[in-house]
Amino acid sequence: MSEFIWSMSISFQLLFIIVSGVLYLYLKFKSFKFYSFYNIFLLGYVLSRLDANYYAAEDFVATFLGGKNAEIFVAILCLYIQIGFCNFYTVFALYFLDLHKHTKKFFAAVINILKSLAIGFFIFGVFSYLIKDYSFYVSLFTFIYIPVMLAVFMPSVFLAMKYSAEHKYFFLTGASIFVVFSLIAFAGSRISSLNMKNPIMFFYIGTILETIFFSLGLAFKVKVFNEERDKVRAEITRHKHQQQISRFQGLLQGEERERKRMAEELHDGIAGDLTAIKFQLSTFNKEEASPKNRNIIEEVSKIIDNSYEQIREISHNLSPSSIINYGLIYTLESFCQKIEKNFRIRFKFNFSGEKPDLSKAVQIHIYRIIKELVNNMLKHAHATEGSLDIFYEKPKMRIILEDNGKGFSQDPTSKGIGLSNIDSRIRFLNARLVKENTKAGTRFIIEINTNLVPDHNSFF
Image 1: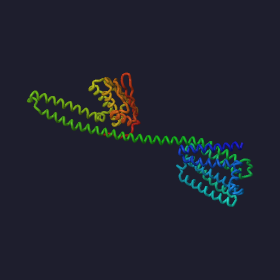
Image 2: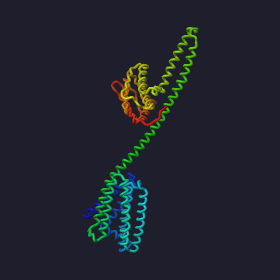
Image 3: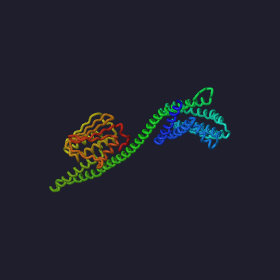
Image 4: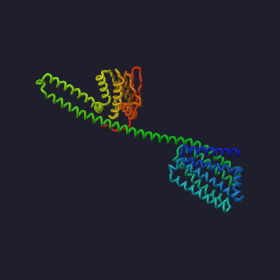
């Protein structure tokens, strides 16, 4: 039975040397490097507990140091290996429980204590070997090392319960079992009155149970790690998206300002000049003019009137002042009426739901998207009928634009400025645009969640 448990303990150490090494290389957790060292030292110690291996080590050392020196050297070495795996396990535990993040001063203090113990007991080991007194080394281990390690263990448990994530419960359970069973094994091997036949069995069982609970804790640790990594990735994605939104916002705001400036220049400049020209023409006395000159004056007046109306229309399209004055729905209804009048096609408009409480900037974006889609429909689809349906129930807005035309290409590799602007505005609004080919023609569906529209400044 003892050999079976010994073999099981060896198997667990070999397995976790591989597992901890792979996890260190894959996850880049420093803690798993120390867990690898812990398992390597522990494996060496467990191997030495088999009499055949222990005596083989003595025989090997005896070839260099002699028989008596080999006995004390190997005994001290085995005890120092225990100090090694206990130290590495403690460092691993502090990292694994994230105490290096939350209790930096305590973590640094424990690291210094462990370094001091490692150096001190190396010196004590050399001294014990020189005086040929192994019992002196055991006494130092019993009355210095063990109490110091227990003094480190207790506050570590308290701090882990305060700061560590869910994986702490499994890990601390396994670590506590390991400490308790190790102390039982040590006491049984040193206190003869306990009459324990094979105390090292407790140590083997403790290491096996520790690795089992560690596996459960590791599963939770990886879960926490993945959640933190996903959180970081989501934050990076959100930051990149915010940068894109800011860039789109700047471009679109610049475009709207330029449109507004050009509209004002057309209205105040050219339109004003045409009005002045017409006024000058009106000063001519048509009654005294010859019939030929009278016709010319009337013709020029008509041209001026037409030019003025065209400039007024262009100015309005560049800067839809009706949105500012009357809102999106009124502007779109007027736009559809103009489509029917100017292009002589049936174009229905329907709105249902709540009155949109959207900012002027968002309303202008929506207007530009719809206007560009309608322009493409008129230029390329050759439709004779169309409709625009809008439904708004906060925070959802659904826009459906339909026609009976032949459609037009939305090939991403050959997008013009208009379609690129549509894409930019759709992305800025965090909206969704879907094109569907129907038996009657083409349908565009725009879905907007106004809660997802980014914060922005007005264009005006």
